[in-house]
Amino acid sequence: MAQVRGTFPGAYDNVDKMIFGGLGEALKEHPAIWRKTFNVKESSRKFERNTGIVGMGDAQESSEGGAYPTDLIREGYTKDFTHTTFKLAFEVTEEAEEDDLFDIIMQKTKWMAFSCRQVEEKRAANIYNNSFTTEQSPDGVSLFNTAHVLKGGGTARNRLATDADLSRTTLEQAVIDLMTETKFESGQVTDTIDALTLHVPPALEFLADRILFSTGLAQTADNDRNSLKRRQWTLVVNKYLTDTDAWFVQATQKSRHGICSYTRVPISMQPPDSESRTGNRLYKVRFRRSWGAYQWQNAFGTSGG
Picture (cartoon, rainbow, N blue to C red):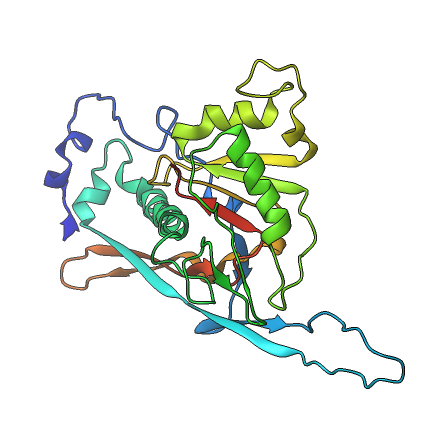
């Protein structure tokens, strides 16, 4: 399907017109949201495999002269990241390029890159949108779950025991759960994360802001100070989250959690081709990327009440 002058006649009239809807001063593309919550890594392989480690269990009591109990360091769960290829092309006639009165066609590369970035946002958001159902952590259960099976034995959770809407008390409980339920695969509790990101849809933005950054205790007439401010909070509002009740907490330092994206090929414009018989020009863009989670630890979520 080639872009001809008849496809967009307003761009070729000999009358001055105001063209709306472009990526200009009136309507601007928002900065990348998904990169605020994803650990972005480079890849030089057709897929990436992440394998966890199960450390030793607790040291055991021993009687005088007793034998040393032994333990092993073992392989943990494995998670594969298979890169997906995305492509888009734009074909335009010579006449459409020559007579482009408002330089609409000249912006083709901008629009093609914009389309790719929109796909990145939507695919990344789907890791969270599907995180209570089909998006799995390496242990084979949903990414946010109340019963992650530890490779060394036992279970742990990174989801409220009973899903609940965002409030001061439920966020406090999420922080407590992060401290007490985030465990190594061998079962020991991990270090506490002080810098945390609260990740919410637009419907929860203003409530989240009050809970995190009020000087006094939010949602109460008490004169107590807001103890949540002891943590270093970052608020991320994601327009691509589909559940208006769901909310997420994760380590702000991206290397501390496992929500990850691999860049195999960044968004790249290909050399244009010309069709020998018609002279039509074909412009192409492509990228290869994968998204997922190679561990559930240091990320917490609830689907709301």
